[in-house]
Amino acid sequence: MGGLFDLTGDAALVTGGSTGLGRQMARALAMAGAQVAILSRRWDAVTAAAEALAQETGRTIVPLVGDVTEGGQIERAIGEALAHFGKIDVLVNNAGVNIREPIERIRDEHWRRIWHTNVTGVMICCRAVVPHMRRAGYGRIINIGSALSLVGLAERTGYAASKGAVLQITRTLAVELAREGITVNCICPGPFATEINRSVLEDPAKSADLLAHVPMGRWGRLEEIEAPVVFLASRAAGYVTGACLSVDGGWTAA
Ligand code: NAD
Image (cartoon, rainbow, N blue to C red; front, side, top):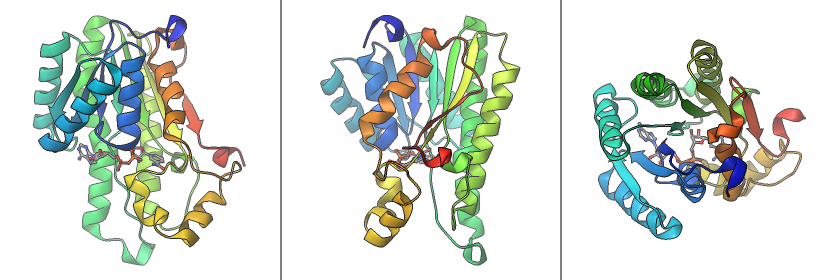
């Protein structure tokens, strides 16, 4: 990619960037020219992913260790990213978890884990990065919501509530930061065949039930998350803020 969507000279940080959609988005941002840091909880996983991505893209990919629910760890990781790049232009809040349970069986610890990761984690990363973006007068924050930011689905009360909150964080910060050169947008993916969907992928009946919601009738292909993130990360998307970009095969249009 180049031209309108060229990210040469920009520095990006992708949370949960060692697997699935996060890894794919980190790759896309690097291919578009950005310097990229990926953050994950485990040093072995994040360094292995960074090395593989560096080979695939020919760029330096910086591995960072941190848990998005731990403010101190995130402050330290952001400090490391700043030491490498001197700035963070693009923050992709992608780290997330899903635990599926009917209402009567929701366990408090699962509810807390979903909420802390998917909601508090986004707030913690934004809180740590925004002061640097404000100083620079420029920033692109991209939160990863879900089709379940917009519609309900049985046995996903915690997850859907958390992803609805991600969309509201997006809108609120978009308004708060609108005059600072910082845009805040949300990508709302439909089903992609990643680790988070393992239990669904392993069960053909559950998989068919899920795809029945998708007018295109298929899983998203990992590469189909690339253009949306590069677009929202680009300078070309400067007047787009507070938006929800659905990448869901038509799920939420139906
Ligand atoms: P995934 O399980 O491969 O990725 C989730 C990543 O988040 C993992 O790398 C995991 O290690 C990381 N993570 C989890 N908790 C963390 C924490 N506390 N601190 C740091 N990192 C943490 O699955 P994925 O599909 O790539 O999910 C990425 C994002 O996309 C998630 O926010 C998910 O909710 C969202 N999403 C996925 C789908 C889908 O169908 N795959 C659909 C809609 C939204």
